[in-house]
Structure formats: structure tokens, C-alpha cells
Amino acid sequence: MTQRIDYYVCLISPWTYLGDARLAAIAAEHGAEINYKPMNLGRVFPETGGLPLAKRPPARQAYRMQELKRWRDFLDVPLTLEPAHFPASEWPAAGMVIAAKAAGRDCGALINGFLSGVWAEERNIADPDTACAIADERGFDGAALLAEAENNDAIKATWDTYSDEALAAGVFGAPAYVIGDEVYWGQDRLDFVDRALAAG
Image 1 (cartoon, helix red, strand yellow):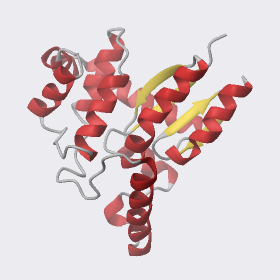
Image 2 (cartoon, helix red, strand yellow):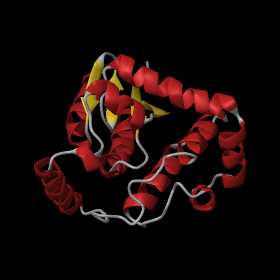
Image 3 (cartoon, rainbow, N blue to C red):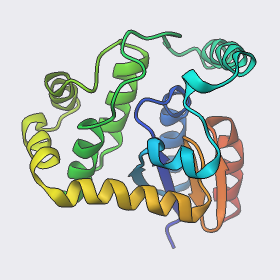
Image 4 (cartoon, rainbow, N blue to C red):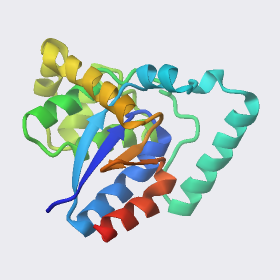
């Protein structure tokens, strides 16, 4: 039986970016399915005690920056510590991911495109033209996905549903990987995701 990882995604999270390619590799190694679920942290944070970055105490903000540098260097990935377009609205990018998934597409490449756009390329994924360009570069029809995100009420409703499902599963931050009843929060828990899949 194929194992499934419910992957709760925030498209502007540096931690989601740092773990995204590694999650894909781990899932492929174990033949596991990734169930992509973009969620709205603007809804999840207030209900779980989280704070937006700007509202966190200085010590927490400083430590976050130290950790970003450590993980960037450890993983040897391109990452701009203070990108030009962060924070940014995740809409319509999140809606475009949901539209791609609804159309039966594997939206992993699209998610990675948006994450890389923010953290490696300093692009503004809140800008519809930029979001379309990223989608096109990743092999999708950006204009069609944008039209779905903007005009299909079911797409926006799904974003809300995924946020509700995240809360029900005990998710409080991004990225979160859920396997069965177990929640693994943060890209630094991917070793445990790997072990859980290996254990079957």
C-alpha cells in the first residue's frame, strides 16, 4: 500500500523552501505519495499561538536569521536572507497550485518554482504576471491556472479547507508533514519523515 505524506505548504516560508526538494527525494526513495496542501498561515497562526515574523521578539528574529544562514550553508542551496518580496501575499500563487492539483497535475514543480522564486530569485509571487511566468517556466499554463484561481470559488474554498484540515491535524507552522496521525513540523524533521516511511 502506497504511503502518503500530507504536505502542508506555505509558499513564502523559507523553511518550506529549504525542505522542499529534500522531501521530494525522500518520497521518491520510498515510493510515497505527496499530497500537497497549501494552507493559509494567516489563519493557522492566530489559532495556534504563532506570530508573524514582524511581531516576534528581537531575540527570536535574530535566532531565525542565524538558523537560515546555518541551513543555507549546510544544504548548500541558494537563499537570500532578506529577499526583496518578503513577506508577500500567497494569493494568487496558492490558488494556482490548488488549480493545478484539481486538474490532476503533479504540482510539486510549481510549488518549488514559487518557493525558489521568493528565496533564490527575489521574485514577487503576489504579482499575477510573475506568478504566471513562474508557472510557465515549470511546464504549466500560467494564464489558465490564474484564471481558475481568480474566478473559481471552489479553489478559494479549498485553500480554506486545507487550512481547516491543518488545524484539525495539529499543524501550527510550515512546513508540516503528516503521516497517519504523526505530525512532523519543520524541514529539520525530515530525517524522522524518512524513518517513518522506511518503517512502513
